[in-house]
Image (cartoon, rainbow, N blue to C red; front, side, top):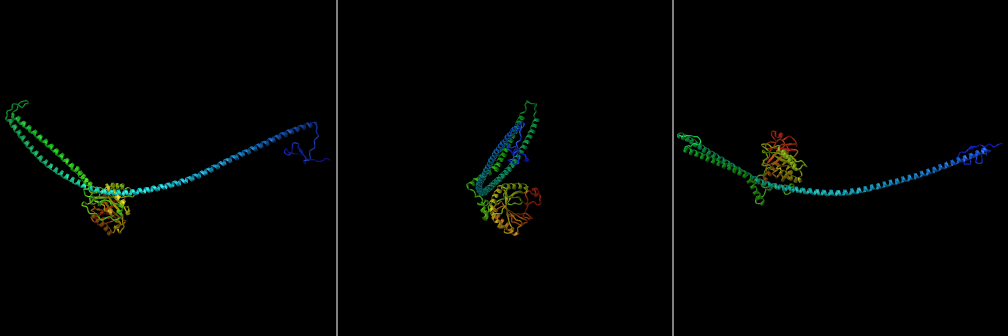
Length: 525
């Protein structure tokens, strides 16, 4: 009885080269087959093939293992290189970021230090500039005050010299005109006498010539002349008469020529004397006055119209009592001592920030169109004032208006009570002949306050020998002394002047002057 055995084929991975077949366990082996010759050869061949196949498989496996190992080594090397490269890049990036961060921190620190240093330098520079600017402004203000004071003194001196020179020129001109008129009358009289004498001589000569012609005709008629042809002889008496007539005609022509030459020479001399009287004599008088003034021999200039030595100080305290009256009354900027009816005042209000020269030019241009045949225009500049500490600026503005021969009007804010107390700081300025007053109030003044102001100004005008003082009040008003040109911006009754308040760029001058009655004072506010 045989033993049953189960056989199977192992896989190539489970068997070795010499174990192709196996049993249930490692002990059980397949039985050895019976071999024949053919089987022996086939077994050898199969063994050889199997060995070759196994050798090929082994070589392939080794090749695969070697390639796998090389691949693994290559991948490991590439991985290591990649990781090293990434590590280097990461370190380089971190180094760059660290350096950038350090650079940024350093730059920020340097920027902060630089800004702090620049801030300190800028603050120091601004402080120095501010101090320099304040110093310059203080010096400019002092210079302006000094120049205004010198300008006021110089203008007062020039005004006195100009008035003296104008007086001398006017007297010289009147003297020259009077002499020229007398000379012309004398020449006219002499000319009439000469003409009458010439006419009488001419009439006598014509009569003598007529008688001579009658006598000659008579003699011709009496004498028996042979012929009157040229070249033939005439009687001796006829020749003598002709020669006498010819000599008389020559003498008369010579006398006429002398008279004409003498007349032309006389006219030329009169013209020379007139020119000398009008142009040369006044200049000689002015030069003499200038020399006398320069040598200190003439009268001292009137100091009542000059600016105070310190305008601000003078404005902060009431001025002295009125100066003694001068012999010659002071005049308005463009002549005369009264405003109406010869002058119409055109007032332009000063704008803050606009230069004084520009405002004065605007006032001059505006007033030009208001001039008429019977009434000249007097430009004026209205300066709003409030704080007495700003009196220095008012004195400077006065110097500008005087240079343009304009009137300065102080616009002083006033209430309904104690107006004189409000005007007290400006008393010294109001003592100037070319300074007027405008009470800048929102409502009309009570009659007692208005009377006190007009009386105060009238006393100032009389004591200082000033021209008529311009006073502008709001609303209706009536009654004022003759020393005050009271202007009402409402309904006015005579002798109060009528004023009209207009915005800048309002109706034209022609429309304003066409009103009936035309305003005496035009205020642009």
